[in-house]
Amino acid sequence: MNNNINSKEIEKILNHLNKQEFDFALERIQKLSIQFPNDLTINKLFASTYFKKSDWPNAIKHYEKILLNEKDKFKTYVNIGVAYFKLGEIHNSIEAYKMSIKDNSNFEIAYNNLAISYIEIGLYEKAFINFIKTLNINKQNNFAKKNIIYLLNFINPKNIEDHFFVEINNEIKKLINKLEKNNLNKIDFLKETINQSENIIKKYYENLIFEETQIYRKNSQDLNCKRHFKVFNKFNVIPKFCFSCYKVQVNLKNVIDLIKLNFVFDKINLQNNNTRKCTIELRDKIKGNYKGYIYCRELIEAKEIKEKLNKILINENFDKFKIELKHGCTEYYNSFPKFKKINLDGEQEFNYNENWYKKENIIDQLEPIRSEKNKKILIQSSKGINLSDILIIKNWISYAFIIGDHSYKKIYKKHIDNSFLNKLLQNQIDFREKEFKKLNY
Picture 1: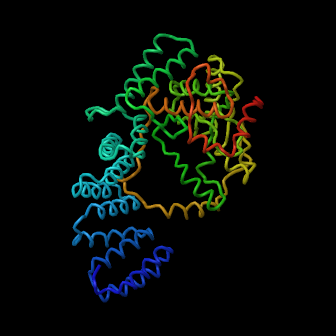
Picture 2: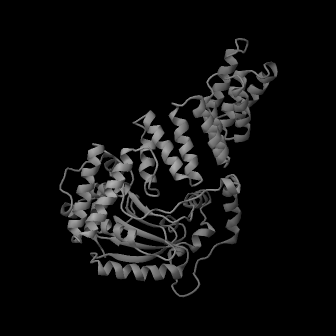
Picture 3: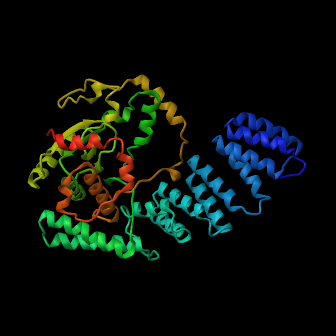
C-alpha cells in the first residue's frame, strides 16, 4: 500500500465492503483516487468493490489497470476470467484463464475455471483435460473429481493422458457389455454388475464417493429449469415454457426396480431422444421414494411415450409400478392447483397469463445477452452404463438401507455406510420409512 494513503481511510472502505455497502465504499475510493491517481492499491480497491457488486465491466477495467504494475498476475487474470464469464463472454474468459496459467502453471483454480468455461460452450474433452490437470496439482480437489466423473457420461476420451477414472469407466463398460451378452437373469445380472464394478473401482481407488443421486440420459435441448425456478421463486408465476412441459412419471416399489428402470432408460429408443431421469426422492414431505421421469414438450408426445413405457415395464415384470402424466413441476402445484390438472383430449383449464411475461422479462434482463459464438451448448449423453451410474446406484442402495427397503439384499451383501445421505435424510427418515411401507399403488 502507498505509505501516503491514510490507513484509517482504507479500514473504513474495507468495513463498507464487509457490510456490502458498495456505493459508500466507491465514494471513498473515488475521493482517494483524485489524490492518488493510478495508484495500485486504489485500483485494487476499485476492482474488488466492482467485482463484489457484480459490476463486471468496471471490475475488468480496473483489473486490467492492476496488470500493468502487478508482479504476480495469475490471480488477477482469474478474476478477469470470472468477470467475462458472468458477462457471457465465454471465449474471453477462456483467454484470461490461459493467461493465468501462463503466469503460474500450478494455479489449480485457473484450470478448474478454464474447464467450466469449456463445458459452457460444449468443449467437453478440453474441459476433461483441464480437470485432469487440476487433479495433478491437487489430488484432493473434489470439485474436479466430481466433474471428471460427470463428463464421462458424455465423452469417451481418446488421445488423452491415461487417468484411472478413464480406465475404470472403460473397464465397467466392457464388463457390462460382457454380462449382457451372457443373458444372465435379471437379479444375477444386477448383482454381477454392481459387485464386479465395485471390484474394478477398488483396484484404482479404495473409497470413491460421488455425492449425486440422479442418473440422467440427456439430449442436447436446454430445458433451462434454473431460470424457470428463478421466475417462480421471485414472482410466484409459472413461466410460459413450463405450460408446454409434460413428463411421464414412474413411481416404483423398491430400489431393485429403480435400478432396472435405469437400464430401461439407457436402452429405450425415443423419436426425440427425450431427456430422462431416475432418482431417489429427497425433497421434504414429497410422496414416493423411487421415481423415473421422461420429459416431453407436448401432451401428445407424453401420451405416446407413457403407453410405450407401460408396455415395456409390464414385459419386464416391474412390481406394482404406477405410471402417470404430470404437468410441469410439482413445486408449482401448491400455488396453482389447477395447473396440476391435465385434460387429455382438449384445451387445458389453466393457461398462461400473458401479464406474467413482464415478470419473466425482469429475470431475463439480469442475464447477459450472449453472442452466437458464446452461446451455451449441450451435448447428449452417451449410451451405456458407466462409472457415474454405478456410483449413484451405490447411493440408491444406501438410501434403501436407510429407509428400510431390504430388497437391496438380493443384489448387495456388503457393509453400507453413506454419511452424506444420512445427513440429507436426517429430518425425514420416519416419513420415508412410512412412504415405503404404504405402497398405495
